[in-house]
View 1 (cartoon, rainbow, N blue to C red):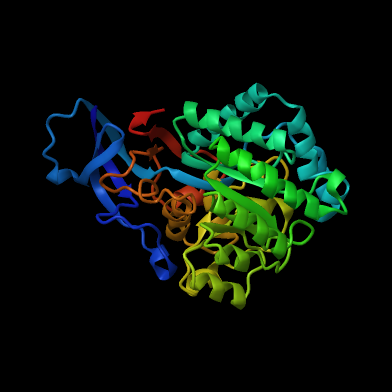
View 2: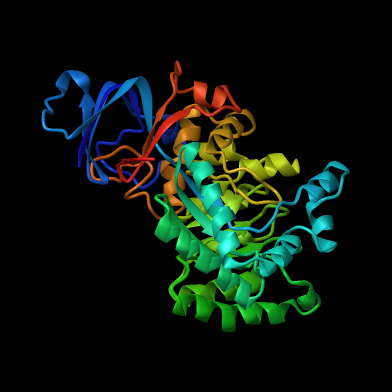
Length: 411
């Protein structure tokens, strides 16, 4: 079907020539066309421009944008949205002053989620996760990476990844699967962590690859979790088996996680609360996307990653929700925009680049997603009647999205 969108107040994040990411001071530039149209053929964008230049007469469907903004849908490159049950009791523990590490040592945190997930059925996990996908879609997300990591046994990790595969098959969102078997150390492996690393390498990875369940491999390389040496071994095994590396790094300390991620040409290194000159120089010499998770830092009341410093150094920056039940129980990417502006001092233009094109890069899909460009997927949303683009992060806490289109189809 050929669809024409008319009377667009401003068509935002337009690219005449596709870029895979945007770096440094270029992040402050957001190319737009005012009083615009856009034409969709099937699931792809085929044309756009100013209304005064529109010559289209054969569209099968015409949609009047009613002088509202059109943006590419958000790409949320870091979530854990397949999980069983909430963790609001730990939320109270945090309010009372317990740290993330203290809660984990008591069997809370990831271990709490792992216990619940091991007891849940695939169908229960699927139904709950599909509801979350519908929720994030309503806020303008069109692509999402979903990690395993709440299984921590071979059987449960495979169960999670099979649920993610089913979500891929049945949701209009673009979904990438990430094998995060090394998300935490099960209680029964405390004191013999190396044995669990061996389990991930020798049993989990081969089975994940055999069933073609994951696009990426990930490791939580940080204080109290996995060491640089253990991370190195697991990433090596993943890459050897054809998985693309990503990494949780430097959330709790200067762990060396960024460096080991870059060593393996990780697509992204995520969290990054602890970043200094050495880490910045390492990233500058790489193709790895620094990815910040503002919701987690906000919810855990942690120091903020030096996003402004990274951008000034010429780096790209992506931002994602980290949607999970323990440290960031929200997948609302409009709130991520607000956090980016208020807590990290990004301009709205930089924040939009960080949550669209750069986060698409962090998922490995920026050739097809993350901007308005001919040939890219027709994943976009029409806003409600708002005065400016800056209004989206400014007027926080409400949904500014009116209509969402994925693969050219209104949702």
